[in-house]
Image 1 (tube, chains in turn orange, red, yellow, blue):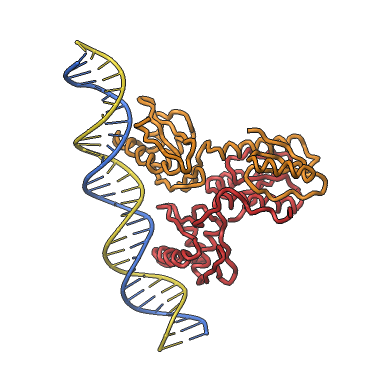
Image 2 (cartoon, chains in turn red, purple, cyan, yellow):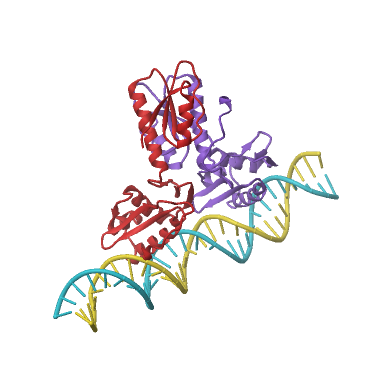
Length: 175
Length: 175
DNA sequence: GTGGTTGTTTCGTCGCTGTGAACTGTCCCG
DNA sequence: CGGGACAGTTCACAGCGACGAAACAACCAC
């Protein structure tokens, strides 16, 4: 996902075209011109002339926004609210801690021991407690298009599904 | 939905707390400091000293991002009239103060303690008074398409039913 | 007085958590 | 191939606490 540099207001037409294409853009506001209020999340602006470092920082910021919008990683509040793809669900304390550990290693395997330590910092209850909480977590986050995959005898892995909204969600056992 | 101004890097801890709470923030980058790379979509930054107009533009940009992610926030005037989506309802004093706290953090969790302090600045009555007022507030604002969601053992969260999908309102100044 | 606002009590309901047990699927050993 | 041993999934249940809701009483404004 690249960020396109656009002069403003002289290249207004080009900017509008990029909006329609859903591409990230950084407006270089010339002279005393007023930057436009953004019409989507993939736009930023900077007054020129500007430091090269400032331009680079804003470009990198836009890249991150674009990645975030592609549904890369969900976000977890300090209040136990999990947000992803425009929706959110509240997570109870234990499941919030488990989810925090999974998000920290989003897309990678987290061992049962690590999960157990995250979920119960002062010692885990019975062995089955983790399984049950993973099950409950799975059901809670399914509506957000998130899934916890099992890697047998290794641990669990959190991932986002390709089409979170409107798409059919296949049963994991059928895959 | 307020945008919080945070000095950077001197108020780093405060910024991190706001990230955890899911609130919008504008970093005022002091001196030669480097702004952090954003961890979510509700952050922007500006080097200070800066024109007041630039700060205002960035605040407005953040507000629009927040609207895009969480829907438009209702407005509460000083006479206790709550307006949203073309309709309005009058709110009695206690409920108006509770609603003000919820609007300030629109879309994010507000703890029971914070609500209690907002509703009764000079000391809260019994423990259940808050529950009852939340119940009454819920019924009053339902007709406006607003809902107060419970995040168990964490607090409450104000949300608008029909969140606009994707786009912003077109920029009026461009016409 | 009338109606709206506020606070309390009381009770019902629901969510969170952990346990035990039944069940499925995989791998390995003989 | 059959029999286990493992790993993991799912359900049912119980205890507890947080929250929801109704009813009631006191109070205030008009």
